[in-house]
View 1: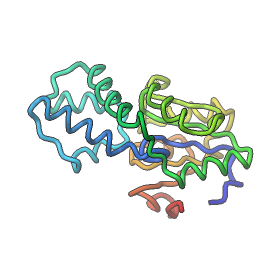
View 2: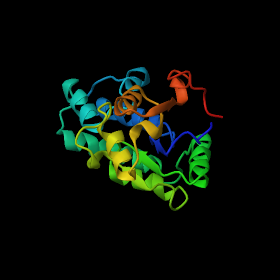
View 3: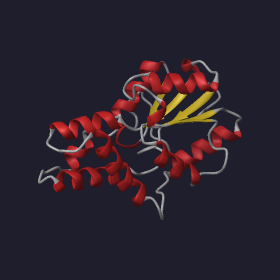
View 4: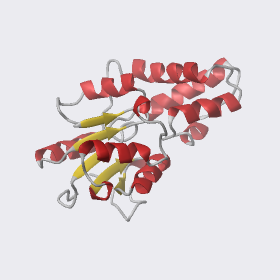
Length: 200
């Protein structure tokens, strides 16, 4: 992928930099099961990319009788425990990150995961991989609202229209597009935005 047309590259985390989506799905299934509710991987896929308050609200509506902050803490804690010994980095995206850094482009991580989980992933990457990191606590309105990507671009001091956003979920893609970024989709949605090819 040619990066010369961009002033910055913005990376989603879950499902993009790291293959944590299966852990999120397992966490949701386990929490539903504790409340004698069924929930499948196929259903869990529908929540991929949602911001955490929205996930918590949805689970409450489906019968999980816990405060939103406890739902968020339980889900994120499960995932953090799951990556404690082995963080499943996506090599192609990490390589793209390295290329962006080598080209002198500013970079940002834009995730709706809690800060503690984002920090765990950052610790597995080379020091200085990102100039800016935005986690769930840093934004008032999460994806699919444009705020996360607008804030990241502003923090880097660049025009969102000159930013390349790398995303794997529909809410994340919608957020980046609404912010005015150029979007490249990866994972199951690869190639669905602007005819972008999958990254290899």
